[in-house]
Length: 316
Image (cartoon, rainbow, N blue to C red; front, side, top):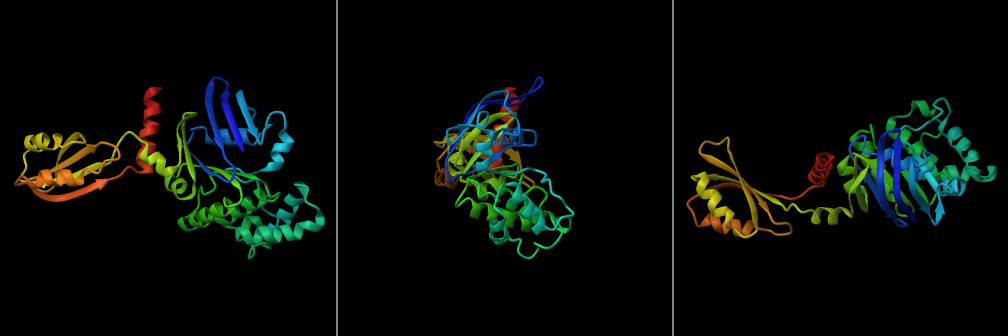
């Protein structure tokens, strides 16, 4: 559906997007994840044809964005980070205007608006001024705008930014519903948002792709395994380190003083895709140590994101 090859964007001497390559399949919801300033918005604007790339090629259904801009734009719906509304217009009038601009026949506009109002949850506010709406309802108007021409591909830039938790859940559900029929690409720096909504996550930092995979595959494919956290009493540091380092699969033992008197905090770094809890427990049971706490910390999207973006920073 979408093929991106060697995509690069310079602003004078600054490289905002650095020779990235990726493909997006039909019907996929792709989350473009990264910290502020990572290059997400620039990438999306190049996909829509708003920015020309400094280098590289973008092809959508075998059409080049550079060579076939009008044909490409007819396939796309785009919600920018700050939606450019006419705030004094009624929602109905604003969307009617958008429909006319998008070339929808006048006789078909009422039915199209009725459908989008139902899909985007705008039926009760169609005759209110856009400027009177909440941020969440404004985002719904923006989605209706982006969906007006029934695009095959929907590109959303930070669609939940500035929303409260309830509004975020509503927009997330709406994106997933739209994604049942459309190819959706949306950017965010909210990790839980990407994890809950996307079929696939691409992490970008300093203009480079540092990870690209399905969420669960991304978690399982990292080199760092789960960490085991223990709190032990009646245990001296030297014995703990010696015994637990001998457990197969334990890569490192980190000790720390615990707030509880006489207790020792222990963190074990483990081999990926191995559950060492039983082996560690059996080792502890052979001693006279008192086990006060024992839990496993699995790899989360947050920890993966932090690790990968720190790694890129160090390499540069």
